[in-house]
Length: 161
Image (cartoon, rainbow, N blue to C red; front, side, top):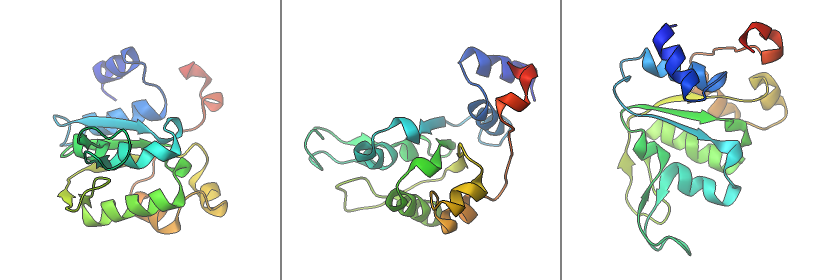
């Protein structure tokens, strides 16, 4: 791990999974492109689709202008989806389609927008447990689990405290 990148990430308040995701991005060919992080556990269910995919003006009450979602903002870079198991199975299905088709459709839009994004996702429980409890779709899990990086919990890494 590059010492300087580690220090910068720490200064930005990153730790654990965030830090690991930022390091993967920084050491990739996409390092000069955007790194966008979204914590699915922190976004209300009724807003998550708009946050991920964006929306068109007039798509719903309060949509007074077009809004790009995090997929568009991260285009050609890296999108870090934290706590993917917190997404509803319906939104997970839409996420799977985006990963497969490499296109998004904003809420209220008729046309699709092509995207080119590297995905990094995390779960706060072991993925096998998320699968057993039906918190993550099996097809989405296998689409995301191309490279798995296991980060032990902080209680097992006391030196990081």
